[in-house]
Amino acid sequence: MAVCHARLLDELEIEQVHAVIGGSMGGMQALEFAAQFPHRLNRLVAISCTPQTTPGTVALRHIQRHAILADAAYNNGEYKAGSVLAGMKIARELGMACYRSREEFDARFQWQPTGPTHFTAQTFDVESYMDYQATKFARYYDPNCYLLLSKAMDLMNLGHGYSYLAQGVSRIECDSLIIGVKQDQLIPCKEQATIVDILQSHGRKSEFVTVGSIFGHDAMFHAQTQKDVFLGLVREFVESTLEEMLLHEVHRYSTL
Picture (cartoon, rainbow, N blue to C red):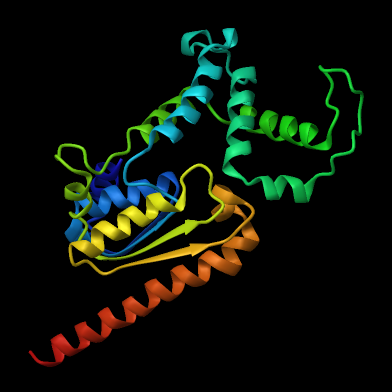
């Protein structure tokens, strides 16, 4: 995917960008771009991502993919256009339970039963919420696309082709800001810390910031958290370094 971004820049005749920024899968692509094309960016911001997918995350996505593939309506990828696959709903519900934190669910919903108590019924508010969100997701998200992107994330590995992960990560040369969310159950902060540890050990300038949010991995998609937390961190990092770069260019041309 990083190669696709590079080719797009080529078509647009853009040799270098000031910053590459991404979160979750976008963060993985940002890391890969910075590693493969270190001279095509000045700064890197990666949020809630990993340099190498871990078995725990693969296990989750395996269950999600299995739910889709086991759905008879999936029909080996030849499903009816516009259909809502039960497997897609299950995959989404499982994802939501992991992308967010228990604190968020416990704060948002009450425990008291609000519906029939039969095992096939939606007894609790949280069940109705999960079903509604999963159905909405399954209506517009293509199952084959979901499977492909899911597998692509599992295959994330900056160490591919190298003896050690550190060799692949150390290809990143630019200054970087790596952000993790303490309550992230999908990609824990220790995976972002690994990126920073490797970069710093190779003499790179890399800053690691952890933030707290009950929205867990989904924190970056929560509008208020974006505004109150991520926007400020990213803007300060990108704009401060942009100012430094512009001053450097002014000085360089003034001495010609």
